[in-house]
Amino acid sequence: MSGFFGGGASGAGGTKTLAVFTPPDNQPTATNFATLDTRNSIAVLDFDDGATNEESTFVGCIPEAATLSSGIKVRITWAATSATSGNCRWGAQWMKLDTDIDSDSFDTATEGQSATSGTSGICTTTEITCTNIDSLAAGDFFRLKIYRDSSDTTNDTMTGDAELISVEVRSAV
Image (cartoon, rainbow, N blue to C red):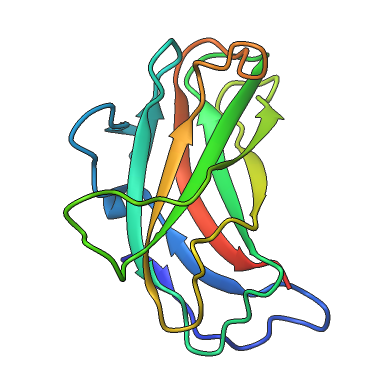
């Protein structure tokens, strides 16, 4: 896993980074998975536009001192392969690893969107505040599903691939 950090405060009144995931940390789903690619030797996950939502899954553990009473912020850093306009809509779903891992039991999705940069290759960060976190608490192992909601053509208007570069998980406290 890319980077897990302890629960130490990162500044007065600020948020705490709980985990950071990069494309090599992805555990692809059996179908509709984002594809591993590179851009200028930087690993990315390509999420296609179109009627089928593509997804990635990351596994981690909530650090011991984490406080999740206000939820979790998921910060997705991404760039468009070639688009210079339009919005990209992302979703996040949480699954606590305390039930049968042979079947998915993700909590209700939370979604957010951001406009792509007007210059190809410039990163955008989409922040999603998740309050549906499957009753996660400090010390719990989890799966985090990230997907592009490209089938929502009202809110996802960007053509071409969205290239995920990293996912930062932060306490919303």
